Image (cartoon, rainbow, N blue to C red; front, side):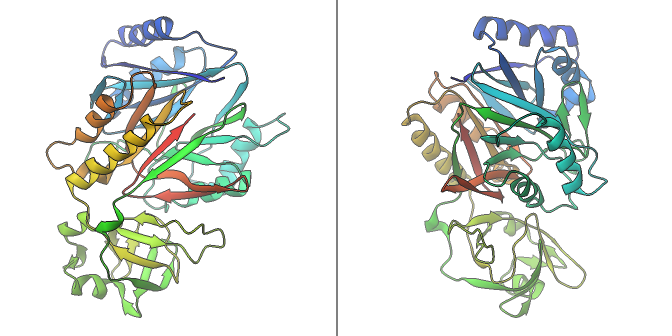
Length: 390
């Protein structure tokens, strides 16, 4: 059986003290079994100071994760904090690794790292946890798609690195004592682990009655909607002006039925518009695909909190939870206006105390929408709250 624990430190400058905080909480809170791995989230200042790398390098097990803007574990919700979620077991096996730089082709780099990490294993992993870098030139779908090709039926869960700067240039991934701007750490989980997943989006009642169709697209680029230039489409609806999305668009996400995908399971995903090209194509953070049907949906502060509250109530009603990871889209945090930690306070105050958890904000969310006949429909999400229960 897997056992979990969440620990933290707020010490950035004194590296020995920071490690002492983590070491003490681990010693007091859990007995490490034969196999252990740690998932880390931290503010970018912990990476810039070297404290994150120092802590991770001194721990007696593999540690991997990402920077984030704010995070929570049991009882706390903070911005300037380093949090560690530990999973340990005798009958679950963890094989961790990190890709080469994605300056080379993503699939080749991922395949090479996967083959190295899985060497000697005779079965497929039961779960893959992946932590891609924030590379705006890559549509987020590339990561779950690559892992789905390599692993066939294995569920894939993870978050893209983010930070709290305007440009997100301080976003990094972590693997043991190293940090990366353009490499992806991951861990493959084998053995006695049966993961459960939740994808929380906005209420269906928020969706506008109008539906449209993507009539010309290429990956994350929508060229035409209903046969109309994409920019013109958004401009006519007050969602674009002077070549850019309007501020209002932050609160009008796309809900897309991915009917163009052969593995579509009937569950829509969310997409976020980032910008327009000079020719009027709309650029999204994730792939859309021609023939996708979409609607628009509003997103307010109360929508974020109510959807999070409902997810927590559902989690608290479940049995057999040994630990939990939750990643919420950074735009859900932006929708909270001045009270940007309100969603995380909802977690820290709402999750039952016997469930060890870690929650933080994501530059993009990776989670299955369903698992049918033991095959996971791994998806990239925006505007969503994703949860892994082990």
